[in-house]
Each structure stands twice: as structure tokens, then as C-alpha cells.
Length: 107
Image (cartoon, rainbow, N blue to C red):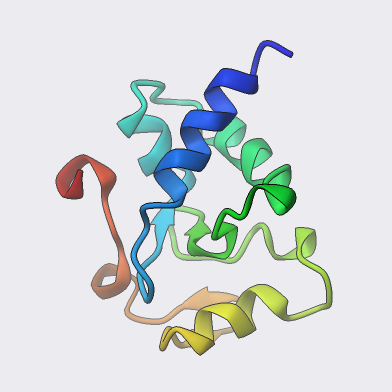
């Protein structure tokens, strides 16, 4: 599969997101030199279940839990984020800027 190498790079970055922080699909794509490939990062997150990747920490650029339907149970993504001290209201991270982790600045 041609995307396998890209997906592995996405997983490597996602594993570095600190507890209690989140990033966006686009921020990971930009860090990997693939600006405009946020959707491909999303596809990688969809396939990350067996890769021990904290996919719940990757959201859209507005802090919305757009990938939540890929988690078991109806609110698992939100529950995982809340267990890390991140408040979620109506599928949106509150104080998103405070919790945002930018790999371009942090790595």
C-alpha cells in the first residue's frame, strides 16, 4: 500500500502528542511536509486502532471531534479527552488554543 509509509509517519507524530494536549489533522500534515493532506492524516487515524496511537488527541482545525464515530461507543473520544482534563461541549474542545500542540513548534 502506497500510503503505508506516510501513515507510519503520522502515527510517529501522533504518539508524541503530550497527555492533556491535542493537535489537528492539518498540523500533522504540515509538519510532515504534506500541507493540504489533512484528510489523509484523518484516514491514517481511522486505521490507527491496532497501532497504540492516541488518535483521540487529533481533531479538526476548529477543535471539533470529527473522528469520534471511529471510536467504539458513542462518546469514547470525548471520554478519553475529558479523562486528560480537556473539556468538551457539543463535540468541541473548550479553550482549544490552550490545549493545542503544534508539532512544528514543539518538535
